[in-house]
Each structure stands twice: as C-alpha cells, then as structure tokens.
View (tube, rainbow, N blue to C red):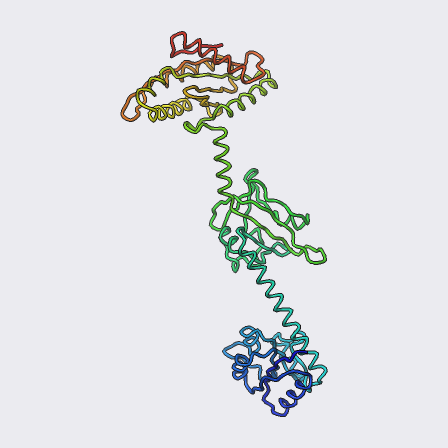
Length: 425
C-alpha cells in the first residue's frame, strides 16, 4: 500500500497521539495534527493530505459553512468524523451520516483501516464519476445542436447552451420542469402540439421529429427544427429518461424553398413556369376524367409588340415591362386560376371549374382591356396588346401537350386575324 497522508483534527492530546500511532502502524503517514477548524484549513492547503480525520466536536461552521464542506469542496479531500455513540445524532441532524463518513470512538484499528480505505475508494469513485460527468457535459456543450436530457417522468435534467439559446430558457430556470412546459413543439402540417418525448419513453425507440416541426420559444418566436428524440437506458435496459437533440433548420428550409421556387417559378416575373403549369394542367385533365361536369380552359397569350419595345428601350425596360404585364394578368384572374410565363413573351392561363367556353372568352376580353391601358416605365408610356388562343376540354384530352398545341394553334389564328384579338380552337 502506498503511504497516504492523513491530517488529524483533534484537541485531546492523548487521543491524537494514539490515533497517530494507529495510523502509522497501519501504514499511513500523519501529515499533521491540529486543534481547530481554521488551522485545519491552513494545513490542508499546505500539506495536501489524502484524507482528513476530524473530531465531531471540532466540526464547527466557519462563516456559516461546515468545516467538512470547506475541505471537500475547495480542496477535494475526503473527510471522516470521529464520534462517540451519542454524537451520532449530530451527524444525522446535519445529514452527514453517509456510509464511511464516520467512525466510532474508541477506535479499533481494523475498523479505522476499513473506514479510511473505503472513504478513499468512495472519494476516488466519486471523483472519476464527476470527471466523466464533466467530460460528457463538455461533449454535449460542444455539439452544434440543442440537447435536452429528461428524466423518465419527462422533467428536464439538463440543457446545453444551444438548447438555451433556441428555447430562450436557462438551464437553471428549466431544471425540474416538465419538458412540454419549456419546449413547445407544434406540427405545422396539422397544427397540433407534439409530445414526442412521452411517445419515445412509451415506445422505447428513437423517433424523428416531424418534417414540419416548429419550436415556439419562450419569447413566442417560431423556429423550424429537426432531428430526433431517443430513450436513455441504464445497464439493465430500463428506460431512465430521454434525450432530445434538435437544430434550427431555418436556413435549410429557406434553401429548399428557394430550390422549389427555382424549379417551378419563373425567376423574372415570379409566375409559375412551364413545368408547374403543365403539372397543374395534367391535374385538371385527370379531374375532368373523373367528373363529367367539370370544365376548364387554357389561354395561350403572345404579346403583339414586345420585340419592338425590347429593341427600342433595351432589355432592362423589357424585363420591367414583362413583370408589369405579369401583374396585370394576375389581376384579371380568380385566386384559383393559374397564369404562367411559358417562355419569352408567351404566357399561359389555366381557368378551372368554368361553365362553358364563354367564361374563357370573357377572361380573354378582360385581359385585352387591361393590356390596352398604358404602362409608365422609366418615364415612358408603353402599351401592348396580345393575341390569345383558347382551348377547353370539350374534347377528351389525354395529354397537356395536346391541349396546349390546340391553344397555340388558335393563338396563331388570332394573330393572323390582325392581332389584339382572340380565337377559340
């Protein structure tokens, strides 16, 4: 056994001398013997003992703090009390009667050796546990995601700094509170609250957060989040809690929305593009197959004098002109209809749930009237007209391309008739 230094705090000289002899006989080194708490603190700082033996009579409070707490918390040295049987009540009253924290007087060497070794072993075990806990905490705190650990009853055990930032709650505020009172999660798809931790603990398996999971933080701010919740098990496989790992996916959502917009919307006018228009037209055709009384129409528009405007005033004015035309076309339609930029100065319109072709021709007239009104761009008064071809599902169309071809054919017929007009296929 390696020699271990022990500090003895005892004011009875004979007892102190006997303790020294017993400790030396057992192979320990007595670093010093002191007679007061203040002196004991100084000696611990100077000699760095492995353990301190304190007579319970000298276990006074210093500035309102127990001597043992000062030694253990500041110097990380274990303390063992020397007590008489009747003094055991003092330990119990001060909640100090844990195993291997005291030994009864008169001392028996075998008991003294056993208690000291167990106290040292317990201290080392607690030290290793604390170090492991600190290491785990450091790992969790260094993660770039929010982490919240709960007990099995759903109450919060710990939060890392990212979780504090996202939720708006400090760990000191949230500790012991039920997770649902701190982390408000809502599924935006269905508008319902999510209690995923409860489901994880009941199911005993990892569950991903819903695709449109939104965190409503302490200040009411809505943050889209993603990741998962996993159960925590002890070495016997029993679930002791859950860990929620989450991150702010606002940037990802914005990127996805941007990619979606680039794929389905025109970058200049922000109208649906050819791809989205064809998809909606295909859906309308399928709907018409299922419902015999469902009618829809397609308008194919070509601006009559856009090339002259673009050549005369330049591409910037030409782009602004197309944007203004897009807004004009939107103003002529119902909210459920679709106007798309099909390419260049060509636009298409899908009119859904119309009564007959007259509804389509009325919209064409409304568009013509709107386009005739002059546009003021960069100090210039610009006017245009459009040739419009109309096709509607009086025939059994199978493919969007066929219907668009017919509308395009009608548009060229209107252009041949002198422009600024419409024709029905």
